[in-house]
Image (cartoon, rainbow, N blue to C red; front, top):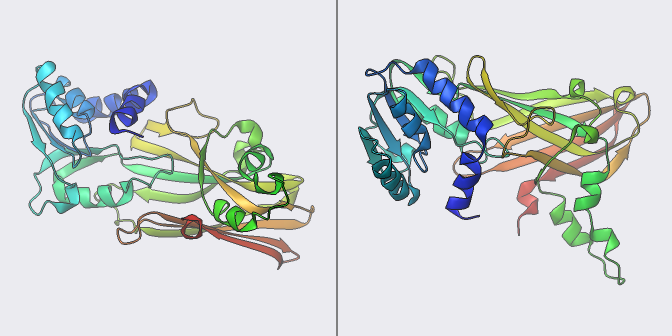
Length: 313
C-alpha cells in the first residue's frame, strides 16, 4: 500500500478524526499549550491542534510524507509548526511539550510500534504533560462460524492430487486482517480482555513482550471453534474512545483473525484455553503466537501451537 493510500484511508475515517479532535479540544489551552505530534504523517492532527489554539506544534515523521505535510501547511496558511524528519526514538534531545499525540495504531494495534513509541514519548513531556492516547485494551474471542476459516484454508480443496500441506502449515501460522462480524462470534460477553496498556506518564511503563491466558467453558461456546478474533479499544482520554469491536460502528481499521490448525469440536464438559503472546521489541519486530489447549476434566487432550514466525517465507 502506498503512503498516500494509507493516509487517504486514515483521513476518510470520520470516527477517528472526530475522536482525536475531541481529545485535542479538551486538553488545549488556546495560546498556551504546546504539542508534539509523533508519526505526524500529513500533519492533520497538528493542523487540528493549531486550529484549536495550540501555541506551537512540532511534527516528527521519518518518511517523505513530512514534505507533503509542509506543503499542506503552506496551502492552509497554518504557522507555528516545526518539522523534524527523524524517528522519534532517535532524537537524543527531544523537544518538550504539554501534549504528545501519536496515532500509530494498526489493525493489530501494536503492529506499528505504538507501545514503544508511547513509552518513549514520556521523554517529550513537560511536567504534568498529557499523552494521547492514554490507554489501550485488547480483546479476544473464539470464532464459532466456519466462514473465515473456509476463506483462508483453501489448501485441502485445491485438488489435482498435489499435497500442499507444507504450504498450508505456513499459511495457518499467520494472522489475517478481516472484517469480523457479530455473527462470526457467539456474543460480546464471551470476549476476554487479554491486554491492558496504560500509557499515562504516572503508570509503570508497559513491557514489549506480553502474554495472557484466557479460558472459556465449552457449554458457553457450543459446537466447534475455528479460530480467534482480536480487536481493541483505544482510550484517547477518559470518555473518548475508538473501538474496532465487531459490535462497534465500523472504522477504517478491521479486526484480526487467528486461525486454528484444525477446528476444535467441543463437548459440554470441555474447557478451551488460549495462551496469547505478543512481542514487539525492536530487535524482534512484530511476533504474535497463540497456543490452544482443549481441557477435559482438567487434563489437556489436544494442543495446537502457532507462531507468525513460522508463517514467514
